[in-house]
Structures are given as structure tokens and as C-alpha cells.
Image (cartoon, rainbow, N blue to C red; front, side):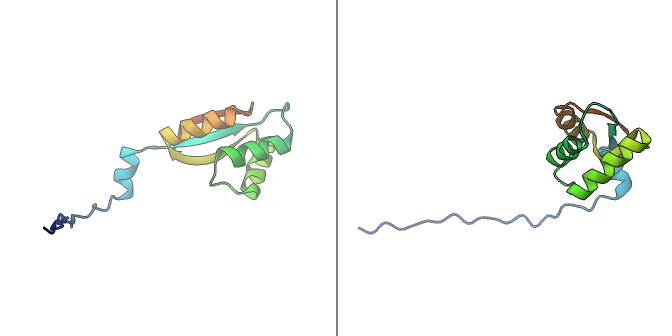
Length: 106
């Protein structure tokens, strides 16, 4: 007696996700700035390493620019992103002993 294989027919969902305009996205996920503050206690190469390790989208050159801006101006914006991501990046940067805050991007 042969066993007949039965394969279920999968229905594909033809619905598409609607495009969300930028204003709606800003209301749903308001952007926050991650701000690195200057300090005179940590070596510059540690700051660059911390930035690159903490925020994967940063290149080493970006991290150097952010570090020099914070050094010369007192603070620098590392990245602007939704609040939850900003809090995550802040914690990672602070784990290297650096001073970092977040604030809403107006």
C-alpha cells in the first residue's frame, strides 16, 4: 500500500505594509540625540574605541570627529535615533567610563 503524500497549500499574504510618512514616524518614534560629553580623564583612543564598539554604524573616522568635537566644544552628538536605541547606546558608551546623555531632538 503506497502512502500518498499530502502537502498543505500555503496561502501567501498579498497585503503590503503601508508607507509611513516621516511626520507619522516622528510621532510614533520621536528621535533622541545621544550626546558625548568631554572629560579629561579618558585617553582619546579609548573614546574612539568606545564609540566604534558602542554604535556599530559609526566608522573610525566618524568616531574621531565626534571625539574631537566633544573635546573642543564640550559635547558632541554621537547619533540621533529612537529613544529605546538612544538609551541602549548611552548605556554602552557609559560602560566604557565615558559621560553620555540623551535628550529629545527638537
